[in-house]
Image 1 (cartoon, rainbow, N blue to C red):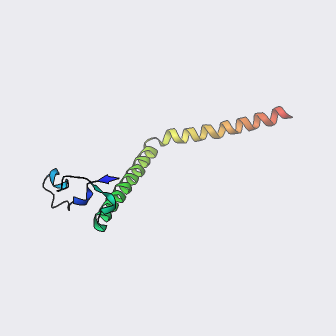
Image 2: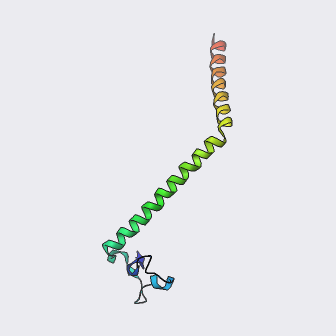
Image 3: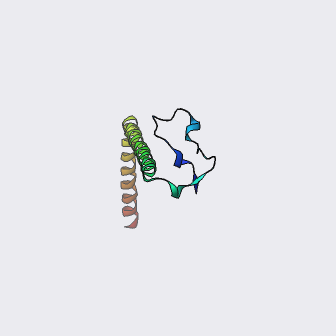
Length: 94
């Protein structure tokens, strides 16, 4: 697996996208990444994942609040449908 992360600088030191490219003009193996760069990549990935989870939870909360009437109506309908099926089976089996 090849990548150019070996020449990655801190975000505040990067002035252009060309600063991110390897200086030797070639790609290097990700196995040669320094420990600090791997740590930065891991932190970036984990923080992105946590942000996505937080946004999905917020979206779920708004869905439940916004559609609570429909959700409660559906639960009540499913409950009475279940009772009707159970009662119908009990009455027809006797």
